[in-house]
Image (cartoon, rainbow, N blue to C red; front, side):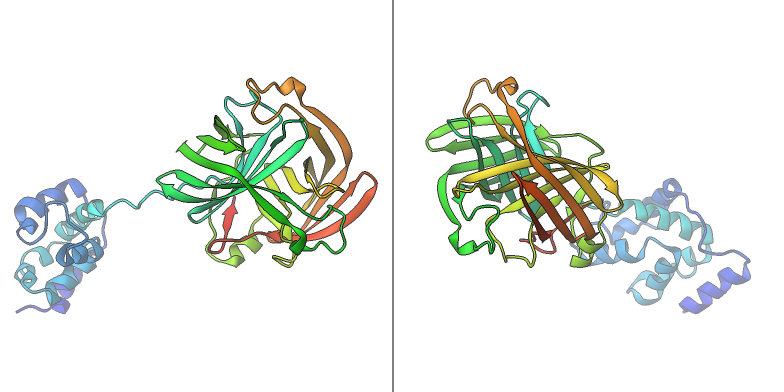
Length: 367
């Protein structure tokens, strides 16, 4: 019986390399008719069956097929035929390569800033998604019944394909300028529930009940620059190496000031940030800043506080949203996971060291 070594030697002596380009169409004929591979393998190999699994693993190269002839029971019968034809080996390998199951598409990641659809139709409110694993942490920036800024948060777990649900909370806590900021003084009150259902990567619906008021909004991504693509981070080093800062950030070290946070939406050379924190009386307060790039790793802009129509207004009229400048903000990034947030609000100047909030796996990285 010829050995694999003899088979390879014959190919070399013939002056032909078996690592040549194959014709998958001709390979199909070889697979189904000439060498009758379907006597032992499915017409479309099933990766859950061991023989087919090995075929898909080793049969995509001529060298792999030759090796199988030497070690797989019954395949040595081809040492005198298939093994002697470099072109047959190349063509058969090329065809088998087409049979490998397609890699599943990457899981959709919805991280970023969303607002009512169509875009601009209800400018003045929005909802941020920090999407990690099968969980979306949502922070919704809107207005209470008196028109004062109100933010609600929700940790929404995946309940079905493209669907995430959770409880909506309103929180109170220490004022934004409290030193130290004590997480023990933060209190959360359940006010309802919300469900996010996505029809594709950029469109969805936000259904919610808040204090007995049930509504449904069609939502879409807010685009003000080049949208980044977000996916699960392989390791924490992936966050450090990132040059796109889109994510939910909070005080460093992680957990030290749990109860407030800032969403950075990074598109092109602009960061639109929504900061959820507390007013001097401890009530919820949110501020926004459109921060342009002023130097490598540095983004600066004016902080605004807004009032507007109540969250349940139908229609929600953007013309009734009023923004008042209250100060300035600057973000300075040491790397993709470490930064400082310097701000002045109504004459109060402070600086916070911030880091990404990771609540599942290694987090999410955008690029």
